[in-house]
Structure formats: C-alpha cells, structure tokens
Length: 595
Image (tube, rainbow, N blue to C red; front, side, top):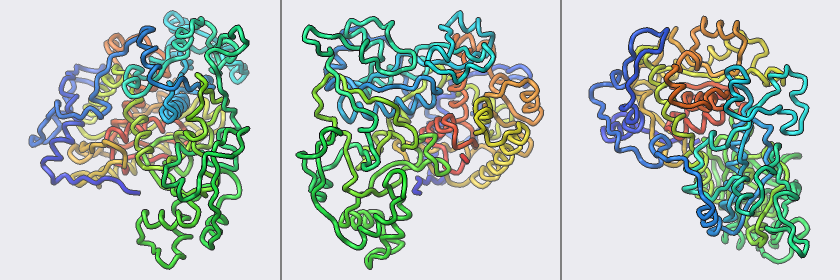
C-alpha cells in the first residue's frame, strides 16, 4: 500500500502542516473542567518554540477550515438547482439502521446521482436511538416515537418501553446539508414533496419510496412526475459487476456496443470480442466460486507473473496492460478494514480485477432514462464496497473519496467542540499525546458481535492495543510521518513534535455502555469519558441536540479523529466514520488499528 511520506526535516512543510493542525486552536481559550484541576493550558504551549502558526494558510479543502452556514432553500432556489440536472434519483432508505450506516448509504446515493446527473433525494429525518436524560426531556425538543411502530419492525419490542423509544430529528442535524449542496444537487423528501405540491406528512417512517403517495396521477392515468424503477435484482445480479461508467478505451478493447442486451434487465449494451488465451482461462479459474467475480490484486499478480514479461517488480501499469490483452480489466476500489467491507471507509484505495464481459456501467444502463424520477428499490449496501460499485478510473474513485472525506461534512458546532475537547485531553496528560478507543457494547453484546462478551475482558483487550499504540507513537516521535493515500491530505505533525504518552496516562474511550458500575470501572482503569470533558457551558452553546446519543456520538467520532492513536472493532460503522475523519485530517496510517 502506498502512503505519502513526510520528513520533519523540511522547514516549509513543518510550517504548513503544523498550521493546518494547530491554526484553528488559536481562538480557543479554556478554563477548568471540574475534577481535572487548575485552568488548562493551550496545546500551543506544548509546542517547540520554533513552530510557527499560520492559521490563514489552511486550504479550503481541509474539512476543519471551511465555514458554511446552514440555510433553508426556498421554492425558487430548489427549482433552480433541480433544473440543472436530468431529474431525481430516489432510493429506499433503511431508516431503522444507525446513523453511520445511513451516512454511507447516503454517500452512495450522492455518488449515483452525480454519475447520472440527477438530483439525489435523501430522507428528511432520521431516528436518534437514545437520550442522555429522561426520555420526556428529549421529547420536549424532538418528536418521540416507538421505534417498532415507526419503522414497522418488532426488533425492539421485547426491550423495556423506554428503550423502544426514538426521536425523529431533521437529517440536517447529522451533517452540514448546506455544504454538500455546494458540490452536489440534493433535496430532502419533504423538499421534493413541496416541489410537487404534495403534503410532507406522507413521508414514510421506514424510509421507503412510496410510489402511491409521492406521485400525482394525471388525467390520463400516468404518474406525475414520471417514474422509472430499478428493481433490486437489476442493480447487480450475480452475472455482472456494477461499475460507474465504461470508458471509451475499454469499450474499444471489448467491442462494447449500445445495441442489444437484455432490455428487461435494463442492460443497454453488450461485449462482443471473445477472448481465448491461456492467461484468460487461468484468471477465470481463480475467480471465487461464490459472490462477486472479482480477483484481488495479489492474486492477479501471482497469476500474471507466469507471463514471461512480468516479474514481482513489474509496475501496476504493466499488469493492467497484460490484463486488458487477456479479457480482464483493472478496477479501482477500497480495501476493507481487517479484510471486511463492513465499515465502508475510503482510506485505503486498491486495485482489483474483473472479467470484462461481466462489467456493466451504471451510466450506460440508466444515464439515458427520460423519466423524471429514477428509483432504486431495496437496499444495496450489504457485502458491497463503498459506493456499492467499482470505479473504472482512479480519477472517478478520487472524486468519490473527496465526497466522503470533505463534502459530507460535520456541522460546525461538532467540529468546534471536538477541537476544544481535544485540547482538554492534551492538558489532562500535561501536553503529551493521548490515545482513544471505541468500545461498542449495547446492541453488539445482544447480537454477540462485541469483541469480548465480558466487559472487563473487552477493556483489557482495548488497553493492550493502546499499549501497542503507545510504542508506535514512541517510534514516530521526532521522525517522519505519512498520510493515507487520499486527495488533499496534509500531514498531522503532532505525533512528531508532541511527546508520546507515558505508561499510566489517561486515554479516551467512546462507548455506548450505560451500566454505572462498568462506567466507574472504566474511570478506575484510567479512561476518560465524554461526560468527563463536556461542561454545562459547552452544552448551552452547542444546543439541545447534544442530549441525543446519536448526535453525541458524532462529537465522539470527531474527537477520536484527533487521537494520536485509535483502536476499534472493524465490524462497527462508527469506526469507519472515525477512519474517514482521520484520513481527511492527515493522520499517519500507523496510528490506527481496526480488528
């Protein structure tokens, strides 16, 4: 895996990169945080005197630098935005899932809408799953619903009644909707309904697209706006692999023509050039017996090295040329954490290979649809890569990476408070770097997905990995740093200049554990929790939504993006969100572990 390396010996790089890391902190003066003692120092007091802070030198692509105010679009503004596209792209959204699942499902919808030049429709609301206070306190600020009734499920029916409750909140509380509209055409379901003079009261609780309620019936019996449906089994049945679009050079190699194909399955093109070479058959024979017909790049290299011109030192470009001559294509995607695709982070770009005859383009199949609304029915996120498709060029993958890392931006109040809490964690350890982990309990224990069923064994596991992280930070201190291979990443040099943690230093734990005895045990073992850091003034300035654990979890994700070392479970989408934030903030890949 190629990462970008930066040496601390470059004075110019030192100035720019440290500016990015610490520039915004200049404006935050802090007082005490209760039980942690005297007034806290600013993180700048712990920096070497030679470091120069240039807060105005932060590029606009950095997610911590761009300011955007949340605004409501009026009807004319909505119409102007939609008019620049070819209609709407709608989805069935699984609103019973947690926010991080919803986040990457929305990211996928944004990608598809951009490929097809359509305005993406997203839900108007999501369900916050729990409240930090009495449920009636949160109900005074947000609509309280029974989760089972709201999404037509019995999943939580056996839980105590207070644990069955959820809060229906505007989706704009979870990310900066105004910011995403700077780069993507996006409307909520309620805005779509308003555009078509339909009451927003008909928006479905579970999140599916209600064909009957979301369209008028004209005098001729036709739906208005007009509708085209992509049934779930048309999206990527087992005999094809869905890509974004088919480039001209690939069409030429494979004899792709827009005529023919099985129109009942929405395919509008066929591959006409047959391949019959020993290498083609060797590659086909190595395809997995079940699942998607995709080969890892490691397997590709192993098989292709039998060709007389290819060695273990051959560049990826040479491998690609051999594949193209033998009926396969290199495609661009992401490596899943711990070998899985559960968390959908985009921090690790990779190559894989697909038989050309199996490739089907989203743009080719649906880019010429004339109906005003194009609806993808059902859910497509499970067991698929980020974006739920493969990319045929590195540039198109990079653009999606930018969408995930920079366009889907946290709200400003979360970004600001996370920086303040980061300083408080530094001060707790006298300016030394601090580490953090995510301890998923709650539903993971109930579903037997937790890393350890026993709470104390789980913490022991986390502490063991954080101890390994401390040694990693010791090895990096005073040396050089790398970033993930993502667009616009600027290195976080704090791991070079600030002292590494000492044994016995405090560490941060984000957890959904609520048992008082277990929380007390965490603190006894040196953990700092979110409630130890947040003050009453913080809550007043942030606003009422911080009472909701889903919003509080966003703050914890943002805080963990600043941890010098991070450890979590590779099966939790919360961890995937943290990894994306860390990649965008220039974290060194050595400073995180998901297992």
